[in-house]
Length: 152
Image (cartoon, rainbow, N blue to C red; front, side, top):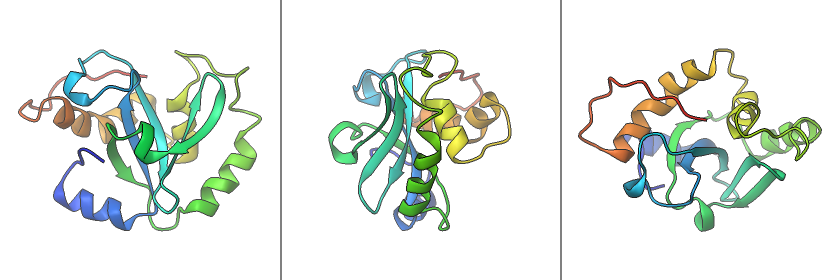
């Protein structure tokens, strides 16, 4: 991953089997990212180097080095979440996350990831807790974290 939240987070993410990753939706690097551009979030399986996410075509897993090289790791999912956990989640999620249910602004990759981690707060709570700081560090390392960041 191009950027991580802290040195400790880098070490923790490398030890983790699964983490959440974020990238600009246009596939470009964060160096070209402008606050307000669309973002895409996915689930990185470190064991198989695959990122699984929800797209307009449904759930898709893709090799991490190919299309997620410009991504940043947001957080580790913990040592109890592994490849078999992802597979189990996907077996139950395919009926809910498909081309017919996808909606760019109301039911998208963000909902998919929140469901995967069983996040109980609001989308804004998740952004404030896990996205804002890594995103601002990736976009502009010298920025202070005191802005409202609303994406997805």
